[in-house]
Amino acid sequence: MFGRGKRSRRGAGVDAADGLADDVQAIDEEASAQDVAEADSLDESVPGERSQQGAGAGGWRVDGPWDESEVGDPADGGRRVDLGGMWLAGRPGVDLQVQVDQNSGSVEGVTLVTGESGLEIRPFAAPRTLGIWEEVREELTQSLQQQGAQVQPGDGPFGPEVRALLPVQLPDGQQGVQPLRFLGIDGPRWFLRGVVSGRAAVEPGAAADLEEIFRDVVVVRGKDPMAPREPLPLRLPPQAAAPEAVEEGAQDEEQARELPQLPERGPEITETR
Image 1 (cartoon, rainbow, N blue to C red):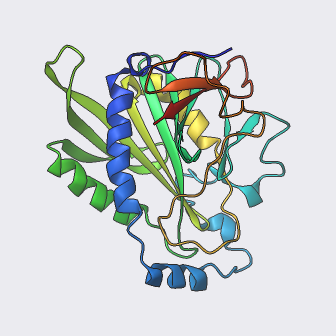
Image 2: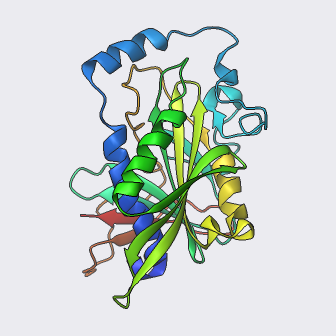
């Protein structure tokens, strides 16, 4: 069964987060050849240190998100969906949308949507011994302020985060503000970023399911040398429908296709041209 992933379903909040995530990714991809060489030297394994990176006093890396070396089975008996660079577990009532470039077939992003809230998740490469979230927070704050957003630091269940009110144009043409929360986790040789949008960015109760999904992510860094901040490659799950199996006659810019069944909910894939 196929459905159309229209932006009206996702809401202005998720759309605003998607656009801003593109800006942040442009910052994240400014790695030079020298960065790659540095990453190679830093990626040499030191026994006993991998699981400690990113673990704070609050325990936000003690109980997730996880590195693949910290879990026995990343798929957890089929509970998680394999997206290549990370594994995600669903929740009842939460849709999983994967943005796919139609020309290249590459996965450009992953967004979880529930009600009026969204969570965009993306894993990146990072040096083994150095966390990058502190530096990314500073760059992110500057980028948001340049876009006219009100920005303030925050402290959430995953440690330091960035909270912002971003000016947006509402569907009726009026001007409004979109609340956003930017989450960051420094792991062993990886960095995991989350962008919470909509109601979950201001109401703790509305964020519970999305935060639990974020906490339950398993990052699969791999052994290949990568430049710091380079996005980890994502892919469609092996069980997903073939790229050609798009709803016949669909005219929308974004079209949905089905992912493997998550607990009590069928996820979606949204394709972008």
